[in-house]
Length: 358
Image (cartoon, rainbow, N blue to C red):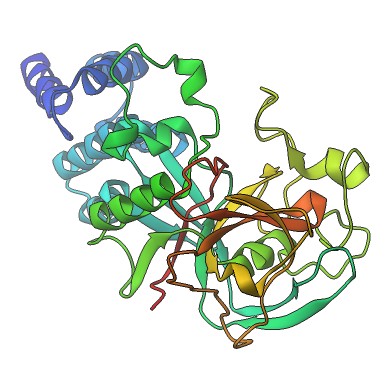
């Protein structure tokens, strides 16, 4: 019996599910510690192999670490194969399939797994309608329709997450572990590079016709409001300046202030840490926007966006050499615009997994 158990334990714990990396080896040793007493009890006849399998499966379901979950689920699968429980083995195989996918959707959320760079949580945005702000502080809006669902990041992109894009992956030791947790500020060129690389990297995982990109202005505002109809909600309107008022204190994350993340209010779709500036996909003709009379140059404040050409999935796309990219400033009830190629338009971003924009 002991020889059989020793052989089984060796087989269970030596199986390199995702490769013999240092992180894997560390997690493997932790799993051995977690189950040491259970296998000791099994060896003494105090537990059955099925009971050890149940314990292993329970630990897998409760674990938050991707590598540990995979090790435990695979271990449970092997135990139940030994027991001969085909039904349990089939269910665990289904779960293992989910664990190894890089893009996983579940109800109103989704997860994009980045390997050693962590993972990204997304909120699902269904089709719907939003009153899009179109003019600075005068209350003008335009009702627009979002006809295709998409996913948007629950929180802005961090330095660690952005490092999946090789040009933003610093040499070891250059950036501290604490700094890696911060939300990253990117210019338009960097943001587009991240989106293009993520799309290529995850192309086999994404839904047909979907890419990783910045949100359109309409998608961004729709995700901010999250369908709320409650005037008391801090996510109800973007038509007035909210600086140092209750809405600002409840919602705005000061990404330059080094404050703790994920402590601000989240909306009905679980999206939070809205920043004072966030980059969007749209590019505009500078002759079609309203700006302050004395505001000129490569980086300007916008009082009114151009007229909409459509109310279904609107998105400004301007290809002229003088084109400008939009940055939403929700708590100042306006937008910034930066000349494409200016590359000093630093701001946080949220990635979207959405239909490719033609």
